Length: 116
Image (cartoon, rainbow, N blue to C red; front, top):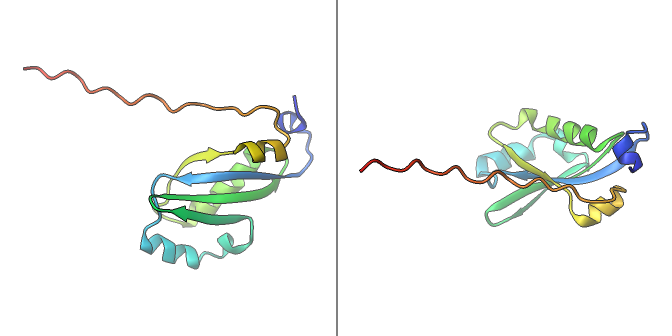
């Protein structure tokens, strides 16, 4: 078990991505430009066609605390929903995590057979 899993109280820098459920709208982009808390260097928007995410770097005792602090940023950002939290293999190594934990998404719900 690594120090990050034990929660030793050591504050460290955690790197992760918050992936949005949809790209930002023009109105949401304009709102983001005026939210001061998104301009302190700990969270930054990365976009490509059909995809938006925030790259995060937060100091905290545990990864859970870092993610919770990042999610608090979205309190004043209406209509923006986080789909997932992702940590790539480089960040896993930097964060000192021995193995990635992957939880697959649940299978899509099957439609009930129609009565004909």
